[in-house]
Length: 305
Image 1: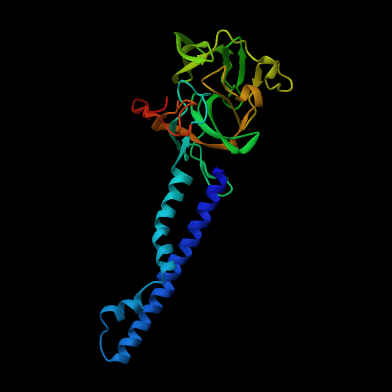
Image 2: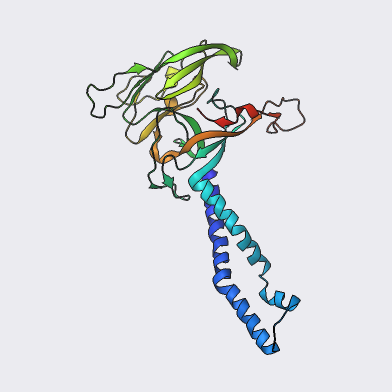
């Protein structure tokens, strides 16, 4: 849907821009020439309604030329700078909640053309710990938001709710060893899956400290993990040009553990700021639709960690 909207936005920009250019450089000079001819025939300057009638733009031209700067600004902003994204699920709790609206920095991982989404200018690459938006490798029409855990060449192990990372060896000696990602228990009870209280932990992933949730009473779904050829269950080697993504709500996230890696060409951008947050806890007995917010969480507005 987002891609179709981008194409529609480009088409509208081109169409209204063409009308604006034709009016500025062809039709408006022609109207002024007609006014000059009329004034010459009348032997003097025309004023009032008669002059206005000769110089007036047709309604459709006026409307198209008027909206062109607005549509062009929206296209530039959305395609190259920032795009809004609504959090659709609880897979990134507690960092992001259902009802959060975030800004995605489109230029963080390269500038792409708005139609074919091909990178035209390299500006940066994902870093471990980034919260990023990308096209679902299984269905590119869907955007997902997760956290970057593995970079190209990394070895990732997830076993018994413990995350291990061995960074890619890039010529240094000795090569980095496989090490557990450090996390500190901050207690149970603030979040639940059904009746299961979740363990809230502060994890240090690269240079980023952030909270994750785990369900101590729910076993890992190892049988559902993506089995990479040549690797054991729960172990992955990130290919070149790909990334390993995980949700912060570790036992309630369909991520790279289950469907594999995120190709570089699927990257949309880096989530950087929560600009609005709504409570979306309307009960089934409410006469209003479930998508109508029940309140605003002003305290959640701010940078994403």
